[in-house]
Length: 255
Length: 275
Image (cartoon, rainbow over all chains, first blue to last red; front, side, top):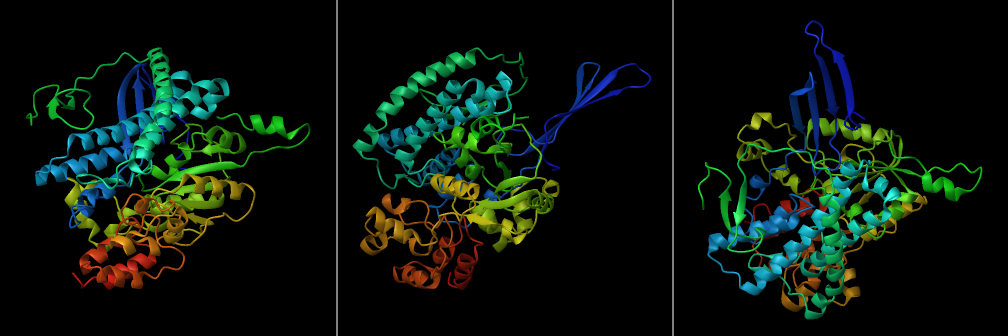
């Protein structure tokens, strides 16, 4: 297949100057969201060329949203990404509520935050255990990793499932939740449904702490970037679901 | 490379030649949600992986086992010249090919371009539209190559995916009913949102599979599983009109995630002038 393949390394002598150049070509980056290839040339031990080609096909969401009713963007934009649909649903809701001057009462904001946390738990467990840990620990995949460390992978899957349980109780389903609407939710979860999450989440806390201990021991490359960072900054807490836009350097106006 | 057949060989007994079926998962234009459904089988994933060799699945593994593959799951629609060629390579490498999700079976939400000017879309979104290679239409996989089974949904249902894998492993027909969401709604005991509350609902024309989720949350079905096997979309549209829905809205409810599915497309086109 033209688009599949493990990294292919090539080595070629450089006539004349005596330097050695090496190329590294990855035709399909694995265990990432989306589709891309990477081409790296190393000359005399230094990277001289990096080409990242993203061939994920465009889907034109900005264009196809025109002419839709204000009620529709939360469902439509969810389809931008099946791994983080809630991020798009929340952004779509907040944009429309902001435009209309609509205020979402604090209890509904809390429920939205709970839904969003469900997605974070699911998505981060997916990334840590199924997408990235195999690279840090030297395996092809989480399934490969499970042959030697089944407990570790099972912990990741358990944590991921706990996030999905929140998404299902609050959002109706974990991928493209059906319960999110501009202004709040179609139906509030019952007290019993929420209580049903308690035991799962108590176990997930222990799994999350074990995860911190695990990844703190990973060998991260010593790398720093000279770039400007962009984030939301809420009055308190993590920048998950709101706040002012702030940057880590000059250039962008504060809103 | 994944070490082949570790579990299978041990269980097959001495002398038996055991080979786990090889599974490949391919992505075209899509959101990743349907292939994520496989990784969302948290309780079943490691068992599935012991019965099936995951031979090609870039979202899950960097190992690539060469084809041919016993079963290919294909997510996404065809929207670029390169993908229109690649799907033929995928078909050639696959003994069985199953499409998963609204993009692969109907063109997905990106098929809304089929009703508009795609090149205007490209200019509206990108500062340098000339860099963007795209086809005028988003088309389902079956418009390009023969498909052995289509599993509907946006996203597909986890239980149905496991049922399809199981069926193809054992060479039998997947137990996926083609009736409407209404059947699931009745079974669930949900009061009909359209009859009781006048809430517009696509349940009568939509393929079952989600478990009738939306009505259980007090909203109408929005058709994310696409048309059921024998939809009477014209009759439902008449009911929506009777409930007071303007023609342009009737057109729009049929134009979401399965807009290019023939039954939904035809009904939406009947309401073209109504708005």
